[in-house]
Image (cartoon, rainbow, N blue to C red; front, side, top):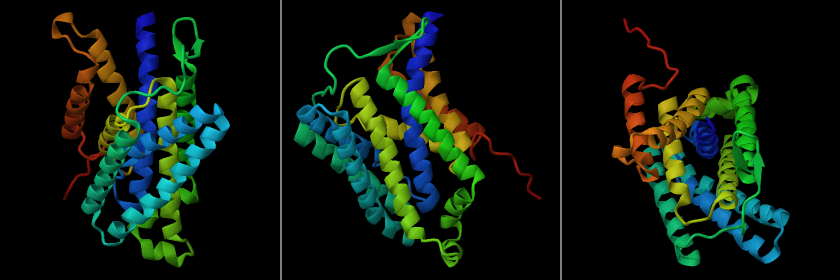
Length: 294
């Protein structure tokens, strides 16, 4: 039982990291129809900026402010990089531009900081013991903050007029503009929000384990898959798909027969298998309903 709970808790931490990537992808796609997959590299760069300042100052506040500034800068850059593709309705080229930007940024990180892992915190990580399981303090912050932020975003998107405006920007940009809404500013704000959310994940990963130049790649790819499994217009489905892709592979790896010899390196294999099954069964999203055609 203790082993089961510990796997569940560890999977929840990873799942919440992926969730914030998926939610960020969902928000950016809602206003631009572009999947900004460079968020993985951006989160990594923001985490490294936190690391640099923390090594010199030892201050979480100063490091956090510096990292936040870089996240906002990347949000601004992302907006101007991808806005022309949105206006030209070249969403596929926008995805390619985002991917190219992300790969270039990851390569730059590798050149500057080299590929060996960097630890922000030295020594044993602080943990919170709940009796049957324990969780690191950065992991607890990730799960609690991630779930709270996701619930707030879901409430705003589904239950407030701001959410309706958000969903309307790509559907009828001219109508939204005629109502006095600065659609361009909203898009830029969403890009900045997505970079801040994923930058937070990057910093938490650095505090919880270690920084590597390509640590954001699997997270953003899993979030990208969760977005399409859950439904690109359904944030509820995105949340469920995210934890489905995070929890199921972990239990399959840890509870598989010994002769199969599965390890953490096989996780993405299970992610893609689950994605294939879900897409075949529910191609329009987990909570989509079959519409009868006349």
